[in-house]
Length: 437
Image (cartoon, rainbow, N blue to C red; front, side, top):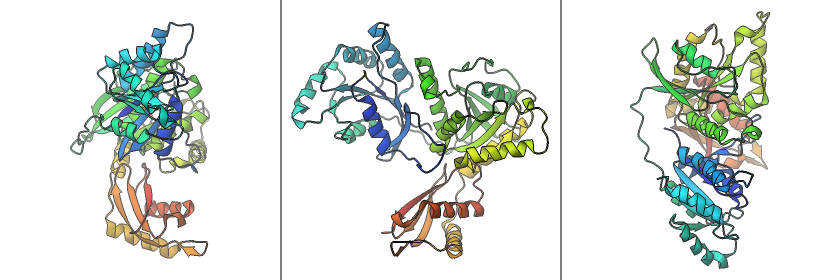
């Protein structure tokens, strides 16, 4: 089930980006020492009180040569179409403006839950001015300070109370997977080649696909799949049109709703920095990943080293995806495409695999014996036991005497030992350090 989407809307200079960063920056899981994992400012995964959600910054309502109402409507429509909950950000310094009233009218008719945030309430004496915002007709206004974090907790409490109920999909045996990548890497062509029919519009013009398109099919072994073709993800500097922002939203939701994500690269063009940026979305979301190198038929003069050299380049540039299998295909000639469903199925099964605690701790004790825990300032890290607490991705809690004593290099060593003992190829695994009570 895809995470709920929370869209942040508002005119410029209300502190919208500050509030966005406050929510995302403090409650987002990010590995800072992992190269190549970057985050686009307009999209983030966030969490509050155990509820995971996707946070979207739809951009400020810019005053340009276009009529004000047109600008307001374009920004609001993006939020209305995709969001489950909308945060309308205003500010106490300017009070209720005409632009705020225009947005409120549109959002009021949307039938989407709208939470009204009044930002820049840094001075407690100004809290009484917040009552003026009841005139927008959106219910209780929440005074917040994006800079200092005051009131953000109450705001998020209201947001998660409006999340839709999620259904239990454990009985659904269908494997959902999606293609992501830069524009014009051949994602739609791969969909058509796998299906053996033209279900998706294919064009050499970059950006032809605007929406995420779901297609279900059954593999030869009877396994059910739902395949999603998504719009190409562009550099954030090029995401300037509302349609592009809409496409990015759809792509991110497709990732959230996927069990396995196929990162498509263009063999003809080679690797680009944006490829690493895009793959980072799937990695950060904890999804099983397969790297698909398309257009392999266009590489001239291939020999026995060509594929090896390209694989080594991918491993060097995508170090954080060392667990992801790589396949070289051609949508045009259908080379190796018959292997993709089986690879998706294996990655899916590995992401859902559970390890018995007794077997896991046997592996852990062997790892500690082979490489004893390090010391720091005269204190030695003590590892007591571990247990698996979740799947998709497989998540393990390791109980220790002091989590601060576990250096990231030793944590990586333990992860490698777990991977050597159990087949988690295709899926990330998460280790959580926790102090034993």
